[in-house]
Image (cartoon, rainbow, N blue to C red; front, side, top):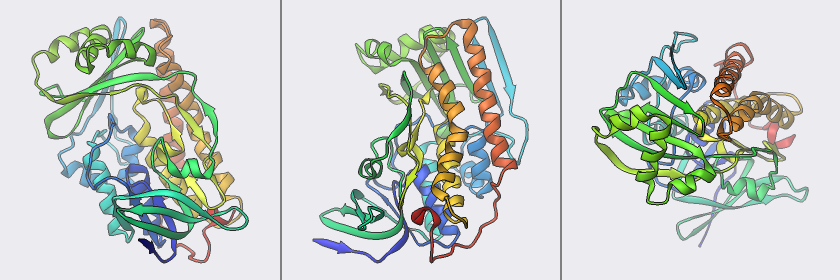
Length: 397
């Protein structure tokens, strides 16, 4: 059976944080948006779900931070770095309307963003996958083909956005290349525990391994351990639970001991490692946000913040007036990403010494400060410019 739908301004594949945020922002500007996802509403996904200041700033600016707080997400007012021979606590000072950090479960955050997209007028459909891209005679993307159960779907669009993760069908069918690829990746094991102190983020670094505590909803904390992807394969021999304990014992022995007295909530989950990349951000009739276009190793817990940031860049550029939108989106995303991408790659390689890791973390902090400066002092205003329905600049560039 084949189902044909009317034309949309934008079709977005993937209704996680990147896609749902993009849909919400474009729909708020008057675009007719179709948001698709192959999973079900409110499901979980592999994520350590920590938000940095930039991500919290985005949610605050969009009016969604109260929803995150109302869901029982704890306010985190410090970040403590446990380095060899020294601990350093950093207070989260009030700036730009943000006085705390948050780490909502993805079942919470993704649902809030989807609900906001739907409230803004986006057509949201779950259980629907993208199987291909439609093109005109010039090769420009003009829509998608997909499946919704047994039905075949064909939808026309001025712009198709891939927000469908690392294995993005939109990126694959668009032929998006990777201009930058990280030379190494970390492997991560995480598990939720009850009763672990919820005073803030805690990050542990020692040569060859790292760990963290990320307080989240329902009185739980996400506790992770990380090492090089090659080392993790050896540590997983005997199971993820034993691997978590072994890496934690090296990275944070005191934390490992304390966890013996706390109840685990659910099984451990492992991310075996995948090198980071920056793919082409856009082309004629298509664009990528979130992990579909830019995946950075999870060791620096900055992926969701990246996704929300790029959703706003794309939504602003798409509805701007003037030529060269493709180049502007690519250039702005890369300018804010490359420094973060490179220092994250150095940390994920796990070939640093105890003396070197402090310098890497200072570089990471400087890169995040640049990102915040762009969000607050650049052209990242909260004003909603009405969409000209006759033209989406990115699609026609």
